[in-house]
Amino acid sequence: MHFFSFLAGFLLIRRIKKPLEKSSLYIKWQSLFAFSGWAVVALFFVVSFFFSDEASVFLGSIFLLGLLLYLEKEPDFSEFKPYIQANYPLVFAGILNSFVGLAMPDFYDSWEGYFKFTIVGSFIWIFARWANSRKQQQELRIVEDRKAELEALVKDRTAELTQQKVALQKTVEELKVTQTQLIQQEKLASLGELTAGIAHEIQNPLNFVNNFSELSVELVDELNSGPLQMLPDAEKGHFRAILQDLTQNLQKIHHHGKRADSIVKGMLQHTRASTGQKELTDINALAEEYIRLSYHGLRAKDKSFCAKMETHFDNNIPKLEVVPQDLGRVLLNLFNNAFYAVQQKMISGALENYQPLVQVSTIWKSKALELRIRDNGCGIPENIRHKILQPFFTTKPTGQGTGLGLSLSYDIITKGHNGEIRINSKEGEYTEFIIRLPMLNLK
Image 1 (cartoon, rainbow, N blue to C red):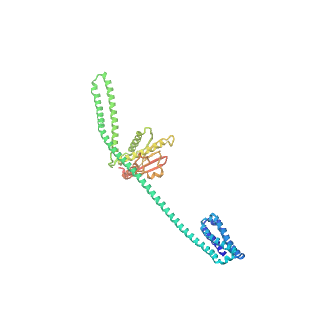
Image 2: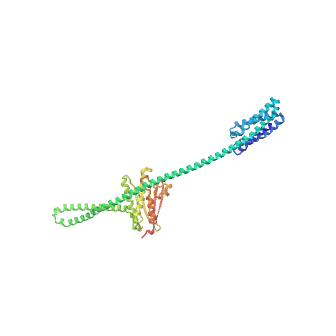
Image 3: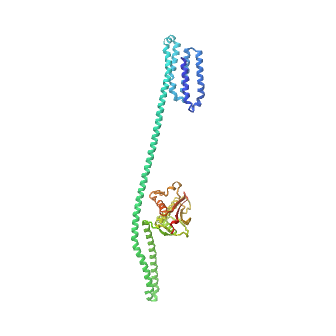
């Protein structure tokens, strides 16, 4: 009956060896597995030939017990504990058989069949436990696989819900920004109507000031050529000095009245909706007018701001048929952005002895007008340059920009004048907008 102990040991080694062949631990235990298989066979034949049946059973049981204790002690075999522990009943049955057979031979002979049955039953028990353990491991593996699938599914669903939440939050924020911008645009429209009304009201008394100043100059001339000649010579010099001062005063009134008149007309042009009517326009004069208008507008808000302006105009450029109000809006928006960029760079103090500079140039090139507006301000980062002409996109802080200026400028140039607008920029150094108006605008 000692055959069962050696066979159980041999099968246990084979049972452990097979799974380990697929793991990194196999290299560590490879020599042991190779030696132990032959050792078990050799030990079985030695015991079978040189010892009695009872002694053979005892030695086989001791061998199996030693093998079990060694395998249980090693952490590398911890996952095989159910297979190892299934052999202990066979060990105890073998030791019991050999002990009773040696100590009480008569009793053993009377119950030999039952004692042998315990060994056979213990051996069968090993395979039953192995089959049950294997089934449990398979079920556990299925549960773990299902758990992993569910965890992956929950993770994917959580990520999807998180993305949807972020997208909804972004949409809500965009809607809030759009609402704020629309409210701001309504306020600006209302302010424009109010400005237009005030400008109209100012226009009438301003016309009276200009007209009567001109008439007063004419009356002084008549007084100087008529009644003045009838005065005594002693009084003529004093009276002529008074009339000269009065003439100078009236001329100043008329000069500043005309200046105020041009300002009012400019206000009316900016508040008046564009009719889309194209007119022959001197682009050089228009650009020069709006760069100065933009600069002084910023200076009115920040007296400490000072920038250098450079104009490089091609005097051979013919007049183009454009919508001056629309093109003026484009130029004013681009100049405002340029002065804002150099102002922010000056405030940041990034460079010592920094001199803000805004340049505008025109050139007649390839049967088209090319107008360039360049500043040495903050520049536009590469990652947002493709968005800069999109509606509602702005790099300015909240409340300082609507994100519509460049988008409207793009539409005016491309759709209204069949032109194109390009952007060259290097972050931290410069930004240049290039407007190209084709020959078809030429008249």
